[in-house]
Image 1 (cartoon, one colour):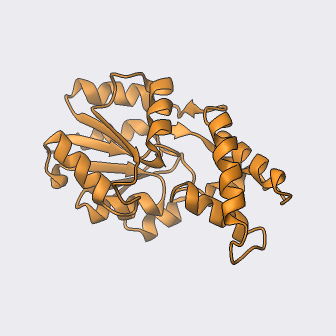
Image 2 (cartoon, helix red, strand yellow; image 1 turned 90 degrees about the vertical axis):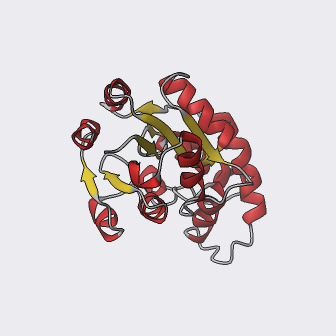
Length: 216
């Protein structure tokens, strides 16, 4: 019997592709590099902003990331200005979260997005009473796919990892949940596809949020 669910944020609870791609392209243009189509960012995201910047450079031909510091500084500014640009909740997520809460499940968020911005996005989309624990990226915790953040949340919730479901849309999320000893659910409405989730051993793959209710 599962007692709680930990959710990834970008691509799982919130569609942030517009905010990330807009911030990334503005940063690239500021240092004289070519912007990308929005869909390219589906494969740049998932491992935090530092890795996002490296992937933006590598795909621009700077395979050694010689301009990393320059682009990282520019992206830090552009993202701060556009972090909430066109950020929306995915269809059916709010209703599913409400139904899960009615079943007395504990709900949490674990993101590689910086902690302050994680809290801000959740506050904007879901208010302050939906989740029992929010955890974005902080220096004291290794970023996903390290299981450290998921295990820390399990401790805060007082729930055994084997009694928790981990929900996300990328290989990073499946590795995180598996590493923490949790039941992993891959979602198809996010940034990646079924093949990636299957190759990373998702225990279950769903196409609509309300399918989570079958597990609890």
